[in-house]
Structures are given as C-alpha cells and as structure tokens.
Length: 357
Ligand code: AHM
Ligand code: MG
Image 1 (cartoon, rainbow, N blue to C red):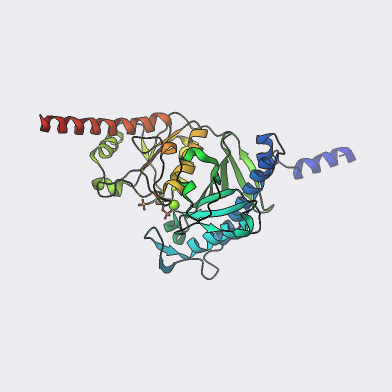
Image 2: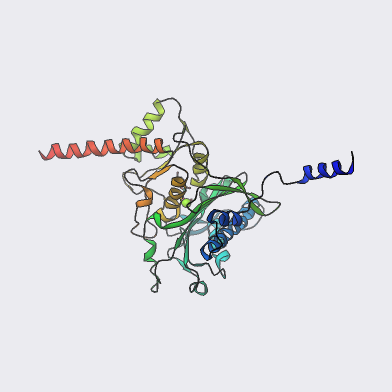
C-alpha cells in the first residue's frame, strides 16, 4: 500500500460515519439566523441537553451510587410519593439554568409553584416548563424513563409571582421536546420547524443529529394504554378497546413511561391513550408539563393530540397543574378513538332528550 492509500485507509477507519450536526448548530440552521432570539433558543436547547447528560449519567450508575434509587418518604403536589431521582432531576434543571441569563422561571410537575431565578429575570424572558423524570415508577427496575420540556415566552412582568400568564393554550409554546433515557439517550425537539432526534454519544458527551424531520404514519398498529383501568373508563373507551381486540392488525404496547411509549408511536405510528375515568374524568397526565409539549411535537410530525373532544393545543388550563385526558398519535387512529367518544356523547344526548319528552 502506498502512502496515499495508507492515509485514505486511516481516514476511512477513523472518519465520522455521519455528518456531525450538534444540537446548538441545528437550532441556528433551522432558524437561518444569528438574531438574539435564535441565539437564545440555541443556548436554551444546549442547557436542556446539559441537564439530559447529567440525568443520563446518574441513571446509568443508579445501582452503584448512594441516594439514586427509592423514595424520599415525601408526597409531591400531585399527591404522589416522591422518588429520590425525582428530586435530583428537578434540581438538575434548576442548576443548569441558574446564571444562564435565559430563563426567569421554571415550572415543574414536582413543584407547587414556579421557581424564580431573580438574577435572570431582567433579561431572561423565557419560562421552562418540565416534567423532570417522567415514568419514575420505572427507575427502580432499570426501564426507560424520560424528561419532557416546553419553552414559552414570558408574557408580562409577573410582579406578584402568580405566573397567571402560563394559563394559556399550548399554541403559545415556542419549543418543546423530550429526552428518552433508554438503550441510548435520545433528545427529540421542535421549535415549530419539524421534529428532530439527537442521540447522545457518551464518548463525545455530545448530542448528535440522528433523525431529521420525523413524520408519523397516518395509521399504525400500536395501541398503548393501561388496560388495567378498563372497568374505570367510560363505555366509549371500552368500546374502542373492544374494537381493536376484534380487528386484525393491532398490537398492544405499554411501558409505563409516557416518553418511551410516545417515542415508539412517533417511530411506528399508532395511538397512545391516557383517558379519564368515570371518577376522574380529567385523567392523570398534566397539560403544561406532559400533554401540551407532546402535542406540539405530534402536530409538527403530522399527527394529532386530542382530549377526545378538543385539540390538546387548544386547551386553556385553569391552574398550573391541570390535567387532561390524552389521545395522541397517528391522525387516523386518534380520529377513530374520537368517533367512539362522539357516538357515546350522541347516545347520551338522545337519552336526555327522550327522558325529557
Ligand atoms: P409521572 O410523571 O409521575 O411519572 O406520571 C406519568 C406517567 C406516564 O409516564 C405514564 O404514561 C403514566 O404515568 C403511567 O401511569 P399508570 O401507571 O397509571 O399507567
Ligand atoms: Mg410525567
């Protein structure tokens, strides 16, 4: 082999096997601008990615380090037992935004009220809303979990600290995404220009573009729901489940962590459901930290997200921790579930009218 061939062979072995686009560069490319807003969004995404790296690192050694697994013994604002990792992940997001000058407030599923970073407030006109550790029941059994995030512009001064401006629809989001801590760590985001996935290369410590412009199929085989709640649902949801049981081409997949289940739906199509129950019609999932960010991504990928009767992105919450039923995924599958709900509502209306006449 001559010298030139040897050099080529060396380059072939060690060169990058893909175009190496980092997250911050991708944001700037998407916006085709170096405006201050573009720089802000790029910096925001880099901070979120940094939080993801801290969390992925801790999760990867959770069985080996102290205070990573198990419960703290406390109960959070959602009435749920707090895990040690819930506390850690919540604090990681706060730490990465302190002294960033970017974010004035952080509102999280784990905190009753938003956390203010006063030194950022004169310049940081954004609010980060997040679920730091989604699916935390999976942590102690080494299964996939995730973080979900959403960015909104701060509307007004919020001088009394009421954060009322956050009680607006999901259409106010300027960015949203999730980080899935699974076999590898994947960050999926959108700034309203498509949905893009980045995979963390642990040896580089960098998220590298792995899938651009993700589009969800109009229909998919998967239905993802906790069927253990079957007898607590309204009849319409039970009818939908009976329908998929009786028709070929459907398969159930449910991992207990929304981020993992939704990632599968993004990749393969289908529908994820967390409906309300007769006793709790609003369901379990929180609008601002879970449903609205995922709905933003889903619409960007060509899918839909609905409460069953309304688009998730149109729902205006009455409080920070408001919950909504969630039906999200491929357009045709979401519409099919809605058709069962409409039918039941129509039957109910007819019964009311007949009983009055
Ligand atoms: P969490 O954010 O407190 O972990 O709760 C949300 C999770 C979702 O990830 C998941 O889809 C759902 O709760 C699972 O709930 P269930 O065990 O009732 O099926
Ligand atoms: Mg959650």
